[in-house]
Image (cartoon, rainbow, N blue to C red; front, top):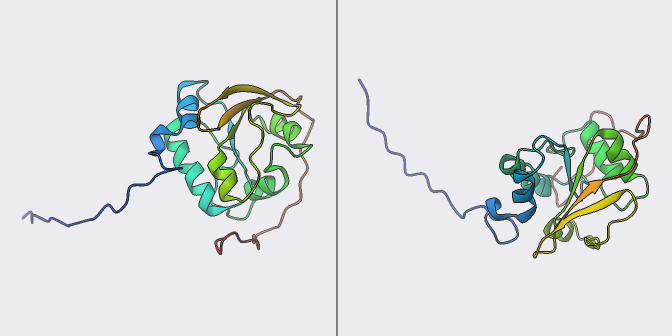
Length: 168
């Protein structure tokens, strides 16, 4: 016997990123239309569960593998992000190339959420080439640095003791 069930689930406020529907984020639209499967890193890539949730949602739109695609569980992704989370750090371009990352995504809203100064998106530092800028101030950079034989970065072991905004 089938019982008709109707549950009044409320959807709440629609999820937005920087005041727009996630499907409209320019960098995610560009990735969706270009170079399927090429690894990318959303920056800043420091462990921050709030920002990472937005990055992970973006991955459902553009479908590119993300170097920082985790929810800050202890491990290599969080450790890599702590060491190379800012593409302006001197060793980041080489680390990205060595890890196989092709694109660096600069979304100003994420930098502002981290209370960091947004990079000059139109003039990437050595090791990157500008692919595209967008009217909202975001950009896609291509990693041009040569890969190194290996990447080294410290690890925190099984527990990530850092928090951002009270979230681990």
